[in-house]
Image (cartoon, rainbow, N blue to C red; front, side, top):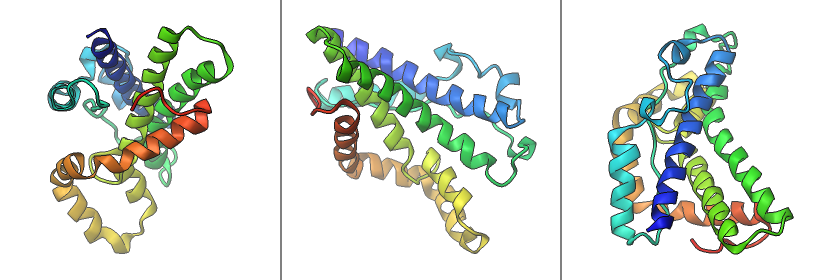
Length: 206
């Protein structure tokens, strides 16, 4: 039970860091919309999404019996790309900032595991932090709206793919639900591989 509670707390704050990073990057690029909306804060209440932050993690806990990884998402921070100083790559930078922040958290705690002798309990807790942040980062890089990967993809595609963009924007949420139930297993090996690269060993669980 303690592990489940800790995992939920880490998941929520990892999601919050993810969203604040989007807003902070947008603010850095000249768009203060997230700041004016009060979203550049680590207060979870400002960011929680009823389904992505609460219902989905609880469902995953129930379906996996508390043994499998959990993940989720928060309400997207409001952003106005027309305010960006960098009109060409601003949206791409903002999209990358979220997963990038989770990767940095994973690297920080993974480095502690790799280079310092830690008590077993602390090693286990830090491993949870690394895995959850890698899972959030890699999941959000999937190019399905409303995930960050779709914004990265849209920033790289030319105008001739406009119909494809519109299709993904229109049906993205339904495609995402299908991916969660039928394609999520493709992410887990990538998370395990990234963990090994950062930590230098296999995960203790997962």
